[in-house]
Image (tube, rainbow, N blue to C red; front, side, top):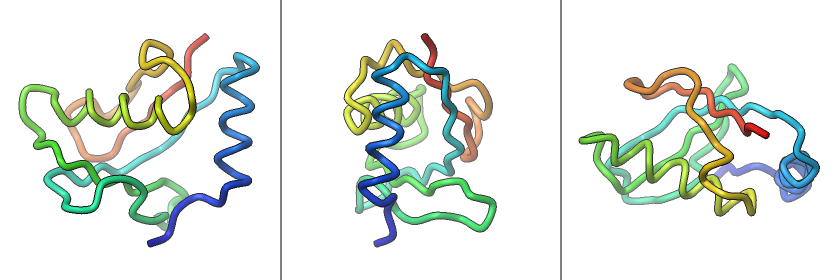
Length: 95
């Protein structure tokens, strides 16, 4: 499984800890048996697997909760700014 290097995730955590606005492009795979990082796509976005279905906003909520845990921040600091109803999303850390 291809996932971000620890160095890259540490950099993202540092941006979040310093309160710097930051964005991440992702492609979400719902109903996925493997939860978490699934690889990097050619356009630079990250593929993330979620066990939750794309029903009643459950997958979006699970994505934000999982990413907040990965970045050691509050879910309230993350917002889906593009792709609310699609697989491809842009998530922004907001100050």
